[in-house]
Image (spheres, rainbow, N blue to C red):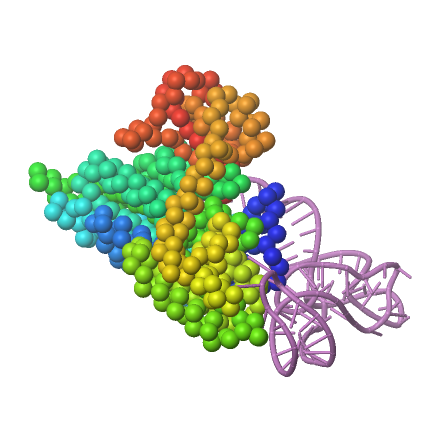
Length: 490
RNA sequence: CGAGCUGUAGCGCAGUUGGUAGCGCGCUUCGUUCGGGACGAAGAGGUCGUGGGUUCGAGUCCCGCCAGCUCGACCA
């Protein structure tokens, strides 16, 4: 690890890439636009998978797997879908020496291939709801890429469900969005705003798209998850039908919902600082690193022994065991590296808690405790350390969310006219809560003039758009005005 | 696909009016160090993106091509 991270707030994306590379979460691959996820990064993804699977199962959804190759004709069956994805799909045209009779699209998403199976699996209303999820890689041939945030190939989770009625589908769409909302805040400690996408921004083939939007440290928005009500659009294209109680053949109503490795990027951009990665304890593999300080003159065995003892005391402590994850403790006995070097290193890769223990501490029966996000050293008696660690890990998770939430709330501005919006957007970025008239043309115009997009339409508890009592901030239109968030985004 | 910039050691870079390859970090070995990125000594590592041209001589000048980055269009 050569250089320290050099933060440049005016160059936030570069700062972010430095954190990713130097914390060894990911690397560029020889194939342009693709990303190599390193063990440091993949362990975060595994934690996300585990937490997400618990929630997915709790909703009655089961995991399955579908092929990555999709016959081109499948993609073309749903009109909006083909229009939305055609520009960014990779296509397999030959296999070995032979040209393929029908080209195969590498999945940009799996609605079509899954529907080809759903059409066979669903026969009766008794088969519904059919709730399936898969963990997979997908490929979207984007022009520009950025580690974790937008890569040609990425890993995600995509849920696909069939329901007997549009209402059931809508209820499930909303349920999964709420699940994502809760997940982002409790697991990633990343505050998000739930909402609905505009017609222009919704998923190709959906009736309605809900999303969660997060704010990064530079005030830009990041879409962190989506949940779509597909209505019967794909069912009609694939003839996914069931025989209902009333003896009539009906099309099913469907949902799909997904989150990707982008969550890792969002988490990094939300919490990390100039020293490197800050990892919420829920996502860490190693939670505590113990750095024994052993000068030549000191008895190495005594210090190492105390460090090992402390490590097991931490792992066996009942408070630590009660944490919602297996708490990893590392004792770094590598004597080729200096203590100072290790401090920087573990700050860089985001270990939540560091303990220093040396000969002077042993005499006093204490150790030095430092929390990654706070960075202040404290002397703590050895006997109290395990309980304190349990306490601090739990509060670090909460504090990160609280801090990020405060930052976000400070950067949400409520404006009612377009000129103020433009001025403030250029001055300080952030999110803009505005009265909005659902005008597609105006939306396009705002995007062209300011690069800000409609992130989401705000919803109330019943998932109804929040009504505004002011005219549209752009057009001055007075009817059917809702509250919406505009922002520049990643 | 348009505009701009950059290609020299694993990474980051310097290389003057053209004269035959350098620096920092990292890596290897040995020694001294070790409570916030130590120091000394000795090493390993480069057909200077690529093809052509000018020249006695090209990393350097000229032309073509290729790749990468940034900004646009596109997007989770």
